[in-house]
Image 1 (tube, helix red, strand yellow):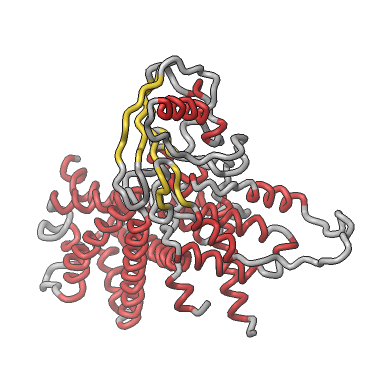
Image 2: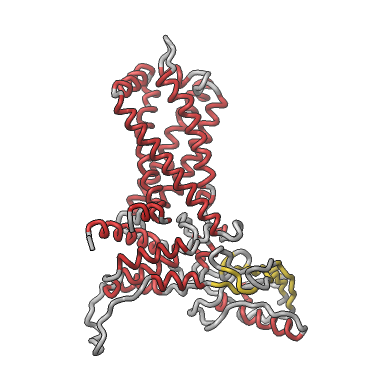
Length: 252
Length: 220
């Protein structure tokens, strides 16, 4: 198959970027999207041109490194799939494919399609630690966890922090990401001790990083490669209110 | 976190919007209850308005609270809208097919509703309270040609504004359900069913009045 690519080229966050046209011919429909970009980059290097920068690591859909906008959708047209797991057979011969970086004020462009998502790391690290008993390893099943909560926590923990939710959102809000991280620990007994502090700090960092507020459109969940649900956001809101109420009654 | 910090956080602002929005919706239901007396008859409607007038300062207190709700809802909405605009590098870059139009136009419909509210106060509210001429009843004002539904421009404006209000509430109720943490609990279904009353049936009730008294009554 032949494809026409329009790729956002930008040297750095301070430079202006613009779209460039590239044409690739005889692309095997069974290669992955990133392999197609590898082929393009090989071609560009041979022609002594600057290759297209894009993030990737595991290429198995579990690390959260990859991700950019394909035809206006984070991670492309296939539901619940990261870019690395997307294949060229999802497109047609002679398709025009538009590639842009995830656009948000809190995600600066490093180069081309590669964006700086350290703001996510700062939200995570502001949450602090979880208290656990050290010393001898204890019996694995010592702490009993309700099956429903364990499943829910697992679904929340599936978030790979790729940033698609922020890119999908009309407000560049990081509520889905933050809510998945808050939910995951709020549902488990290990996360109870620091529950109040965690939600307060994560929400404060999220706001300070300049992410927008949630308008509850649900676009984030619809585009999330790990299908993190909207119930996480409702849970984050509940946890936030509970934290304020418990702060009122608990004097330190 | 202090109360001030809670209210100025993005979630705090949204909670304030959700609560004031719900309270205003309850008022809207009560308001419709009064309006429907128009269908009962002239005497019933005038009697109902006079009864409210007899409550005197209680009504003023209620009005003060309602105005506070409207202004704090609008104020938080504007601040959030501004924060969201600032967070976006390119305002057109988001997943449009997965963002409902009711959500996309919530700020626009909200602004339109505010303009409608101001005209509503300047016409019906002002006349009812301060400008009732001798021999003219409340019923005459509502259905009259000056600011009432006998004026087709006024009726159309009213119908459009209420329709947009319903559209605003369609997103408002689903959003408040998320913000107040109702989604994902056992109350979600009940809440969603009740919200249809507020964003569909109550606006339809309001619209039925200009449609009937402004247009249909003349044709039939």
